[in-house]
Length: 476
Image (cartoon, rainbow, N blue to C red; front, side, top):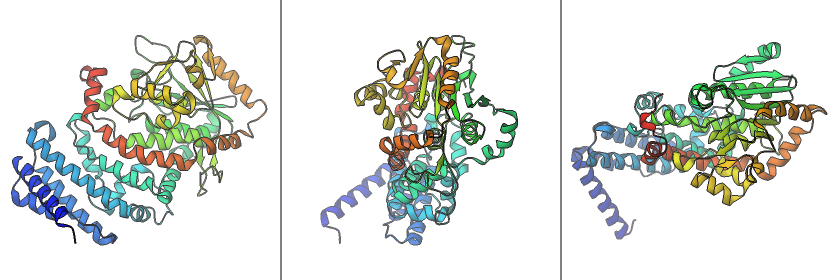
């Protein structure tokens, strides 16, 4: 039995919730029906799933009775916030008990490896309301970021709980380290031609190096929902390629008048696309558990664990060709490279404060290079780091005149491969197991999935983009 004090407190909350929702024009009967449906989870999966689905369905029906976000009054917006917040709290409660059971059902008791893009939508079918359906996400994607209620936050809650569990989290990390089918299909072609242009990424073999070029020239080689699939396919194929021994990441020439004709490494996430609502939440997870983690750890081979202690990955050393700048996600790439060659005029930034998001796994990795104080200055206060500076040289292995970057990268690759790279994978694993073992990454991603979801749909993100990026006046 609950104490009388707790019972009175809960009654007070129910009464005030009803009052606030009725102020927004919702009827007392529908509000009461929703409140009464809030489940008390017992640990029985079938019962809890049915009760939760009923509650989330009624919450969605209540929210649908309110105007769309841009047209809501203050009372209506407050009511929407109550409905969304309580739904998210109940999902956390449900997943605290049942995340492992859900994941095991979705993966046939860990026999199937399912990528996050499919996993989140499969979860919506298994337990209706736990995560949004594809139609619900597509419907919100039609609007500006500021016009969304953030149904994708529930994907972040789901993934956070899956990753927090040691067994399911490690399995999901493994799933995201497996090579994409699109890459495997292109192996024979690349072996014959040594060149594939995927559109937003280009892969070329030169001598013993597989060179991945980021290609988004209109947006200074920024990353967005159009680039991610091509880049990951190119990275997979570069690692699989049996005829190369080392990989290079670079940026191609861009169109911007200030840098026209120059190579630019990467300007990070496309902020205009975020503002316009064109970056889905799963973009962040797919990028960091896919592309970036594959550069750091290699690709998973079969069913063998990719954990360093099992050595179950196929990997190659990576060299970055840093021309002009590495902003945001560009800087994040540098932190998983084995060697970085930069122009003396190049710089790096992690402008998370001005963007209102978490800069990938930089929070996990950057302090290993520059120390915790400078890492905080870069992440929290937007510190710009010149490559040709003491801090910059902690990240960059070699700083050369701007016109010599490409030829220096070629020389570095020759030096790496001249005596073979037979020990490269072993040395990389030995370094990782001390710096960032797979389980540390899993735990970080559990935090990241939830926090980034809330950041991505925060009003502060919109305010930051308008203040620091002049986003309202920019065109897609």
